[in-house]
Amino acid sequence: MQEQALQALVALRIGGERLSITPQNLVEFWAVATRPVERNGLGLSVEAADAELARLESFFPVLPETPAIYPEWRRLVVTYRVTGLRIYDARLVASMQVHGISHLLTFNGDDFRRYTEITVVHPVQAKNEQDKDR
Image (tube, rainbow, N blue to C red; front, top):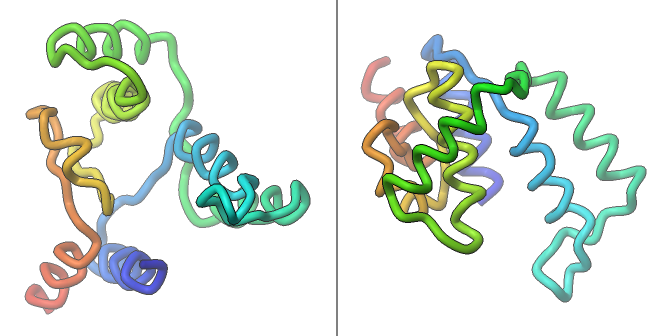
């Protein structure tokens, strides 16, 4: 899926879209990057994961953590009755809301469909939309 993601990011950049990431995206990347391959991770060393974080930070502005994120997260988890591990998705949506971000590029669209505040975009859909606009 890496190639699909890269093509979508390139298409969105060419289309003039503002792309950003949150600290949570980086934290979740670290968890996957350093988790062993046999446990569905990338198995990277701390040094390799750190280098990848630096690369991501150089490509995308990192939206700041702000005190406003928690109350928005709390509103979302109560409104949408979010439980268990899905609370992390709600936190990402809360960060998006606080920073005025309306669209989320993700392969895991079903995890975010409940949130009417945002628009979920699959990477293949993003690339196809940008290709049509050219």
